[in-house]
Image 1 (cartoon, one colour):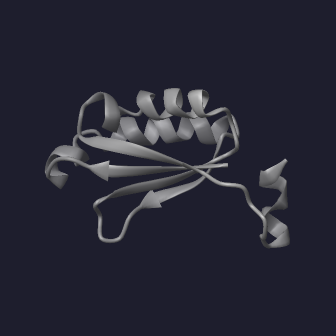
Image 2 (tube, rainbow, N blue to C red):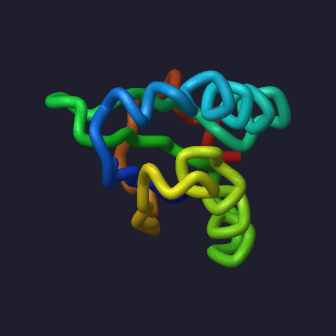
Length: 95
């Protein structure tokens, strides 16, 4: 499992210009089952995406496709982690 941690590099008015493209990117990976959940950080300095366990190279490629990244308004960090405890309702996302 990976956390894709986005950090905005520019003012929010510039970030918001790319929000529709970012949402389309999210939808693509929700539709194919790769993304589990996502949302803005609070305060709004970036975002967080929880991504099913994939090869780091694949996750990097996916993150680099995000319009926030391709347009230079955000950077990202990947955090790889192994779930050891979870609520039962989360189990389907671990398979």
